[in-house]
Length: 202
Image (cartoon, rainbow, N blue to C red; front, side, top):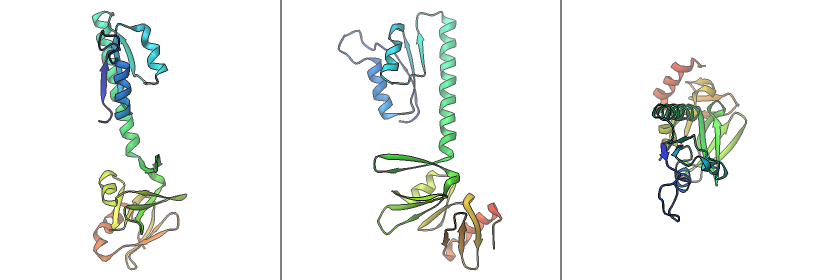
């Protein structure tokens, strides 16, 4: 469940000890951190509780408004929710995300040079413009998930933006940070495709 739009009522049940819309919103946020939550209710005095419980509701629409006002607020809230989701997708497109332990890191794709396998199974090494990081992952899955990562061998995927030059005779790729990687003959087709994109050849 990711980036859904949810309309909730603060008071889901008239029974005192039943779960409320606030409880449900918190449960949704745990499963879908980017959820767009819109409260629709008659309890305007409870709006402050959404702030205290850090739910991050997108809007708080009161039912006791005129039909046209109510419809207008719903339309505005939906438009804002869709805009937020679109913005999030754009940010994700230009960001590489990986996890080390319990921490999640977001790198601008312009800072990613290449990712290679290591001696340890399922352990990858990320070479950045200004450093190195290691994390658990799978190269094939990263290529499928990222538009900007291209395989040059079974052990290396690269960000074409950070290739400085390609030597077809030596089958060697030089990156902007000074690092280089060799590629096998069977990868010539993929590498030539990168050349067509970059025009960087020795």
